[in-house]
Image (cartoon, helix red, strand yellow):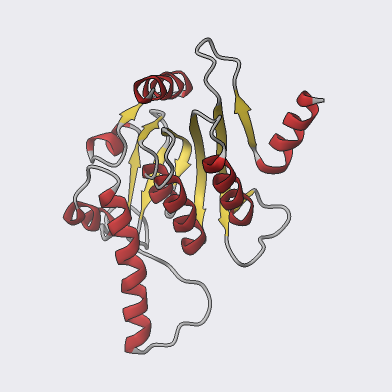
Length: 221
């Protein structure tokens, strides 16, 4: 019965509880996959992480005193800015130890999500794409629109710099770079480059991420 419930949890939300470890720590596994979906539903053929699923789950996790830590697996192309920031803020404010692991990529709003954990890892081949805020649809070309864009950008920049070792000046340089992306602005950092820039704490895979999380849990106890 418990195994069936676990399978359903993975199928529906990409989440499960890891508890078969030697330390007997109870760890929640959260996956952020595909595109972060906001107030509008994405096409059914697209992989997505729905923030209306993730936020209640995080609240329940914070309320569960038996949970020892959380591991976040990230492979996302980005998505809705408000939804992504909401998830990132929730992760950053949790009282249990949290570790993130970037697999494949953590692009756009995926950058704040990756740095929101207490400690972050990236596999050597994974990428992080940093670029300015983009908007879809009609944008009215008035001063208020530009001010609004800047406020959103400042929120993202402020969150990233306050949860990583990169400084604001360098982050903006990477965002506004015109040499990396064809007909676009921004930068792509691969594995160790993200660590050197101070965005991510360390390169490593699932073994290193889980080992570090267990250590953090033990230190907290």
